[in-house]
Length: 595
Image: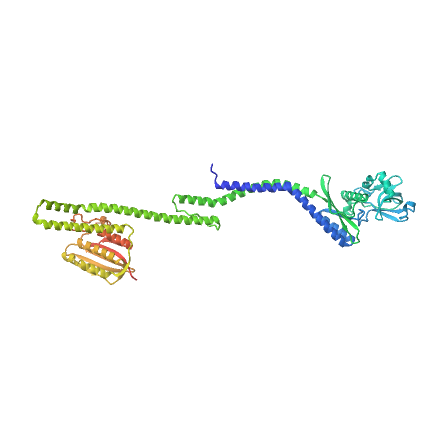
C-alpha cells in the first residue's frame, strides 16, 4: 500500500517526539529523584564546609554564630549546630539546672561550687521538665558524670525518691560491670548536691529552633554517647552522613569536625529532611501525567502541521515534474524560499525552460526535416509532371525523323527538340534552386547596393522583349541604397518584370517605381492588363501555377519564377504581395533602407 509523504513525515515526527517525551518521563520517574537527592546532599556538605570556615572566623561571637545557623537553615532547609569536644551543645544557656555541690569526700574537686548542667541532654525536648516531678529547687540529688578532658559531663540526676533525669542512650550502654570499671578508672564519678535553680525551655516552641527538634536532639545525644563511651574514638572525624527513616520521611545526619582558633575540637552537626524532595518528585509525577497528555496532543498537532508545511513544496514540485514528464512546460514551481527546497525549485524551473527550448528546437528541426521530405516529394512529382510534355514532343520528333516523314523539315524538328531540351534544363535549374530555398538550410548573405541602378540594368537587359510587344515602360527611380542580397533581389525584380511583360497586352504600359517610406524602400512593378481573381491572388506564388489556364505552355515560363521570388523575399524577412489595381496588377516588396 502506498503511503504519502505527508503521513510518513507525520508518523516519523510523532514517533520521534514520543520517544523524546518517553525518555524525559522515564528519566524523571527513575533517575530524577536520585539525582535530586545527590545534588541536595552535595550542596549541604558544601554549605557545612563553608559554615565551618565562617564559624572559625567568628571567634566565638554568639550573635554571629546564630546568624550563620539561621542563614544555613534558610539556604538549605536544614538544622545545624556546633558541639564541643565532649559532645555538648555550644552557645546554649536557656535551659539548665544549677546544682550546688556538697562538701563531701566524693566532691573533693568541686566542693561548694555550683555546677550548671544543660537540660537538653537529660530530658526529651518535646516534653520538657515534668511539672509534677519531685526534682525541684532545694531537692538533694545525686549526679553521675563522666570525667573527660578535665571536664564533668553529667549523664544522670537522681533524687532520693528515685526520680531522675538522664541521657538514656548512655545509661542503656552502662551495665554494672562496665560501670564499676569506669568508676575504678576515674573516668566516671558520683557527685551529690542540692538543686539551686531550674530554668527549662525545652518544651517551648519559641526557644532556640534547633534545640526543639526531637529527632535532631536524639541524634546529637547518640553522637555524644558514642563519643563519651568509645575510648578509641578519634578527636577529629571527617565529613560523614547517615541515612535514616523517621515517620516515613528520609533524613540525613551530617557530622564534621573542625579545629577552633584555640586548638580545641568542634563538631558541626546538621540534619536535613528529604521530604521536600519526595514531595517535589511526587508532584512532578502527578504533573507529568497531565503534561504527557497535553504534550501528546501538541505533538500530534505540531507533527501534522510540520508534515504539511514540509511536504507542501515537495508535493508542488512533484505535481510540476509530473507535468514536465508529460512534456507540459506551461507550469513552473511557485516556490521562492531561500533554502535547499527553493534552490531545487529554481533548478527544476530552469530545467523545464531548457527542456522546453530544446524540444521546441527539436520540433523545428523535425518540421524542417518534414519540409525537406515534402520538398523532395514535390520536386519529384513536379519534375515528373512537367517533363512529360517536352519528352512527348521530343519523342514525336524522333519518331518522325526515324520514319523519314517530312525529310525536308528535319532542321525544324531538330530545332524543336533543342528548344525543349533548353526548357527542360532551365526548369530543372529553377526547381533545384527552389528546393534549396525551401530546405531551410540556405543562408542569405546581405549586401549594400543602389537598387535604382539595378532596376535600370534589368530593364535594359529586357528591352528587346519589351520592343517585341511595343510596351511603354515608365520608371520612377530615386537614388537610394538598400541592405539585401543584390543578386537574389535582382533575380526577383527580373521575375516580376518578365511576368509583367508576359501578361501585358501589346502596346500596353508597365510602371516601375521606388518609394522611400521611413526606414523602408518599396519596390513596385505594375502592368496594365487583366485582373487576377481574388481566389487566385494567394495562389500565384505556388509553383507551376498559371493564372491564364488557356495560355499555351510556350507562352508561359517554367511556372517557378514567382515561387522562387517568394522564397527569396521570405529569406530576407521583408513584406511582399500582389494586388489588383484600377487597370491591371501590381507586384511589390519592401527592402531595408541603408541609414
